Length: 303
Ligand code: 13P
Ligand code: SF4
Image 1 (cartoon, protein in one colour):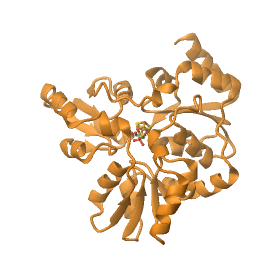
Image 2 (tube, protein in one colour):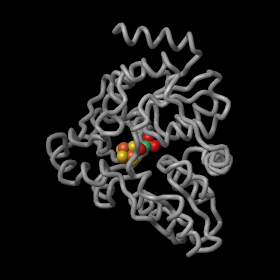
Image 3 (cartoon, helix red, strand yellow):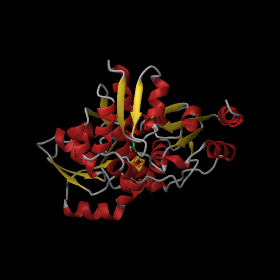
Image 4 (cartoon, protein in one colour):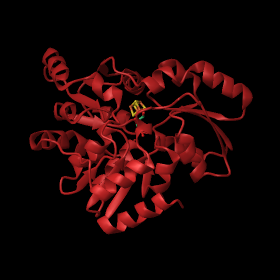
């Protein structure tokens, strides 16, 4: 263990802190995490922890969700500039305009949104329960924002409903995970399952064997009889997979990087714990409104 990692371990005890880490974080950050997981699992962990301080190593919307679900804790985000560009593709104003065009139609917002957009939504979801959340609604028309690819994926499971989609996307999954990349890996490794994230394009999802959230990808690899997997999501997912399943083989798409996830490093984690800053602080009225759809997402559970 490096000196810095050892100091971070001391700081956890000194500050009664827990470190939550998304599956796309740098290996050195994953290694100091108390819990490493997907956005759904981390939101649940944030809502259940007894620690006084939550150090959230993920993009901003994830740290905000922890702050919304857990108002009596100090939430530290080691790099506030670690933003998800998809979350910036819809604003609260544009969602209000969309709602005005479809009065009475419920809004399901992917958790990859700002707190202000959540505050305008009826339900949140992650890719691990998007289908379940939409299926739980009795309305036949549903506004689903902002990820169009995830919306199209959900639509496959609910042909009886009409989803009103928003043209948001994740650059990493839309432009860096391509059918040609998966095909080339499959030619090299013909026995491997091809696993992708539902943020990928419909063509990529059609080519793949399975589409899951990041934690769903891990669960599939744990329970599968197969020994090899092609991983069509952010590259660092394979670090988590190799850590959990060292006897299996994982093939990433090397260019599939989320630059924002890489803005957090061990130095920033250590400094933020020493200073208990930067903190995530949101206006009280936004927290109160955003908590309703987020808590519904947690209560509905994984799909
Ligand atoms: P997961 O919820 O599957 O962890 O995905 C989060 C994300 O940002 C995917 O790009
Ligand atoms: Fe956002 Fe895409 Fe990065 Fe996920 S991988 S945090 S959706 S930019």
